[in-house]
Each structure stands twice: as C-alpha cells, then as structure tokens.
Length: 263
Image 1: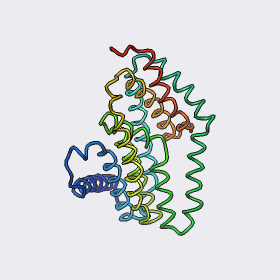
Image 2 (image 1 turned 135 degrees about the horizontal axis):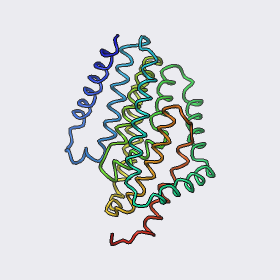
Image 3 (image 1 turned 180 degrees about the horizontal axis):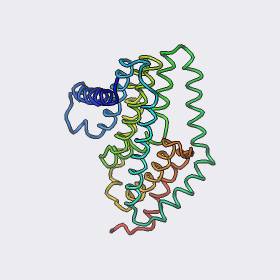
Image 4 (image 1 turned 90 degrees about the horizontal axis):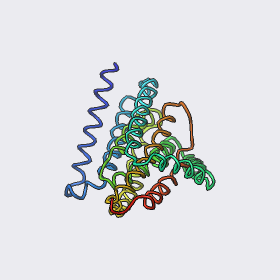
C-alpha cells in the first residue's frame, strides 16, 4: 500500500467513523455538544481499530513514528498558544514548579504507572484479545491528556485537546489492532465510560469560565503541561507529566487572589 493510499484510507475511515457516531447517538445537538470531544475520540479509536484489522501486519512501523512525531509537534504548538493567553507569566511558571513538586511528592505519575501496570498484570494475561483491550485502554485513558481534554471540553466547550488526543489514539489503535487483533475495538467503551463523566463533571464547574483571570492562568498551565507531553511524543525528553497536574489548581487559586474580581 502506497503512502498516499494509506493516508486516504485512514482519513476516509476516520471520517466515516465520526459520522457513524453522530448517527448512533440521535439526541439533540445541545446535549451532544458538551461531550462531543469524547465522541470524536471514540470514533477515531473505532476507525483506527477497523483500519488496523484491515491492513494487518502489512503496515510499516515507520508510519507510527512519523505520525507520532507530527502529533508531538502539533501538541507543543498548541501548548505554546495556550500559554500565551496568560496575563502574568509568573503565575503559570511558578504554579508548574510548585505543582510539579507536590505531584512528585504524592506520586501522581508513579500511581498512574502502577495502576496501568496492575491492570496489565491482572487483566492482560488472558490472551491476545484481552491484552489488546487492557493495553489500549490504559494507553488511551490513563494520563494527563485525558483530564486536560475533558476539562477543556466541559469548561470551555472546546475540543482542541481532545482532537489532538483523538489523532494520537486513532493512530495508536491502528497499530494495536494490526498486531494484537480486535480486542482494541472494545476500548471504545472504555473511552466513553472514563471521559464522559469527567467532561460532564467539568461542565458543572462552568461558572468558573466567567472568571477569565482564573481560566486564562489555568489554561496557561495546561499549555505548559502539553509541551511536556509533546516532548515525550517526540522522544526528546521523558518527564512525569502527570506530576504537574496540581499546578492547575495552584494557578487558579493564585489568580483568584491576585486579580480583582471586577476585571
């Protein structure tokens, strides 16, 4: 299969999967909107998994490397754009430093890694089908990108982060399905079960979105964390990105104290 043909098939499959998800959920547009990023994510996992089953082991591994690098570059660019929205660059930078120390102290990244390892050890030993399901579920749902994307979707009604995550998960599902089989398709359910409650919970905090001084600083910290994730995708530097998550809360707290509420 040529490079052009592969890209055409991949795009067509992802588009068809997205349209299918819209058809499967025949509810009003206003009810779809708060969690449309999760539906997109599930659609790309489904489309990628089906494409992976179709091409099998004939798909060169170089495609994954190139796609991951491209997504990594885009992730860093998105992070820079988010960071530039800050009103005071010291707030997100200091919040990231202190938040990273707190996260490392309480072991957020270590805990997530242990959770993923436990799931693989206890649930992934039942054959290739189960291994495919558990491994892809951990990869797609355990990490800071999941939380950041759901927060953005719920608070700001934007799916930029979940769109990036959808691309990354879609590409990964192609190679998981090609090598491990159809168990990857069940991960669609995991994505929905994990991300829908997170997004809906975040939407309950939407009144915070009216406090622009708070939202801007929290978003800026999220941008810095995205840059950390992008460095990992590019395999330039592997950092415990989840440890920086407490910085989101710190930035919001500091901004609420330093900025006048009338602004």
